[in-house]
Length: 181
Image (cartoon, rainbow, N blue to C red):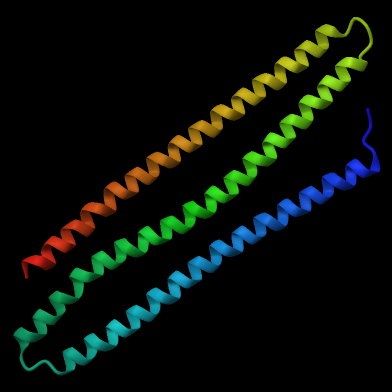
């Protein structure tokens, strides 16, 4: 069985569309990252300017020490918030890539299965064993691929749970410490 020029052209078209789709998703992720960094930088610059003005207007050492102590508490919370946003952007972009990859893999599996079925129908007599071996190998490969996908999903869910488990107590401790003051 050979591919027709229309089938080849169609496959190339689909591949180019997938490439542009992935490129668009990558740029969207980078755009979100740049926006996050610009926002964080702008906020940090503003806070440094305010803090510098407050330090310059401090009347004594005790007031200066209080200003310095008050600077570090919100910093932990802001760092945790920045990390959460960064993780959300990265995991969202990764999820989009994974969705596209799974869709493409599914299409390839369907095409391969169709090709094997078509070849099996046109195979010469006595080649049933070879066709069965090929079908068995493809089925095993598909099962292995699905197992890997499940393992990656579980690892991703575990990483997200661990990330949340680490950042939530930091934010809560920072809030509790700021309420005590």
